[in-house]
Length: 498
Image 1 (cartoon, helix red, strand yellow):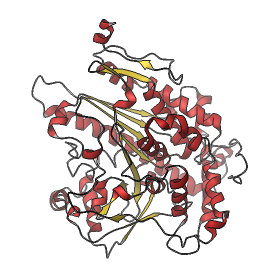
Image 2 (image 1 turned 120 degrees about the vertical axis):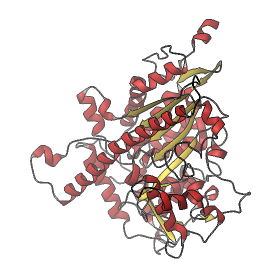
Image 3 (image 1 turned 60 degrees about the vertical axis):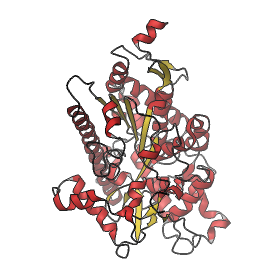
Image 4 (image 1 turned 180 degrees about the vertical axis):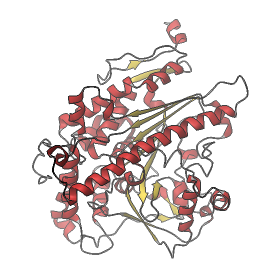
């Protein structure tokens, strides 16, 4: 159960799902029905073509053309997911590779971070502040009782009047708080500056039951400018679990040239009705008439993709309808250079047993609803991971098929990190018992950080990527993860120079 903001939350005595749902439901009961008279932060109208500050691959890809392509995907799961994904960043920071004769951290080769829900806190913070995340994110987010702070907002005098009207809801209030206390008022114009990965925060479009990615290509269909929108509001939308939190609202503005993209009309006219591109195009076409859909409502990204990977990099929205060529991310020349591809999915989903199942009793209504939701999410996660892996492997085959005989091949390594990969049963149960809340004990946070580095080191796909990057040499030194000391990975040529 959720405690008062001033008290420490006790260690979970029952499986993680039960405590997570109890805390979130209590939070929802405390907040439901409250809406405000304070000013909601709305998205703004799009600027004319040619003067836009577009948040997209062409302006935010961090590196000049090269032969590596690295994508990270951070799942949902509250603070558990935030800590687990933070551990992945720590491991990549501590892994040094040699590229074109220069030593660099593997973290500096990351091109894209895509995320949902709890993972979006980590992704957004790194995309805004870079290496500062390693010095202050644990203190500012991971070790704080955010769930208690969110409840505490209700009792502040300056919020009592704000939650009285109908155009300011509980999620708007939390987003404003995050904007002040965590994200320092930053907007998408500040996100992913030169040298940092492009961060794609993902929510779910409740109007159309589709993934909604915070990229300018998506905002084009709303005739809206993403660059002025607060990052905190996007993170809140990505993590707005239905019930405990209300949807985040976006305005759909009248017509603009950016809304009309040829691939949408082509898909509606010629694509297979069961294809993903057709389904996405159909949803986007519903934005065409703002009178029929004046407001979009966004909720937790995990509703449509709790891994945050298919709705972003493999989305026809991000790639202007051309997913096989990743036309939104690469020019044909850049695509021909790609040789070494690494995709890492940090999946913090838990798989704990239910108390009613262990006791052999009938589940009550809440138990049944919770188990039904968990079953849907579990199936969705497994299917999404499988589809994403197949999608990236098919993309790799497509890229290779376009190259002339004898040209270097593109190798795709797709690693999924999950708690089920923990070999020790007792340890696996401990991690699966961690609740889905926005507060964990410090020792739980530390354990999640260390686990991420360990699982990544053990991942065959990660080791394959390092070997391929260095001409087949074994490039790992197990045991150094989490120590803060770089794990140096060098090519045979580099070793010969020593």
